[in-house]
Length: 161
Image 1 (cartoon, one colour):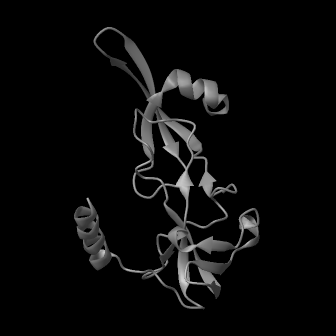
Image 2: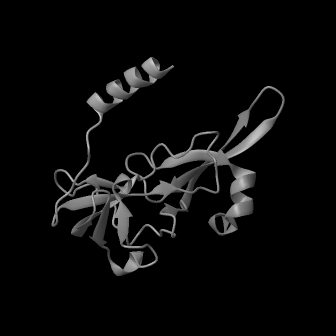
């Protein structure tokens, strides 16, 4: 058992790379979607994963960093573990502004529908299902999905007016 553990540890140690940032680096903040709707078992493939960029003000040990967060993110503590950060590479073309994404204290956001684009009826083996094409906010790429009409009507009645 000990030999197997040592073999696994040496394998992991060779491939592990420590993530370190310097004061003044620009980093992206990892967020996770908190959906009220599960889209037929898919959990937010197109959801934004990072917001930012934010500037590092101070290094606190090897694992924590003090970030310069905007006023919209005042509900989040500004000292974050390195696992929540990614180095900001390249140009800031596809960056989602933190103003549009409302985050809670656990760095989660709720995806919101923007509009209903189309409707259709699908005949399954033994039932008929009404679907609506919903346009979602905060997506990169195609930002629409087919959702169950009854569920959408119950959760978002303002879209059907």
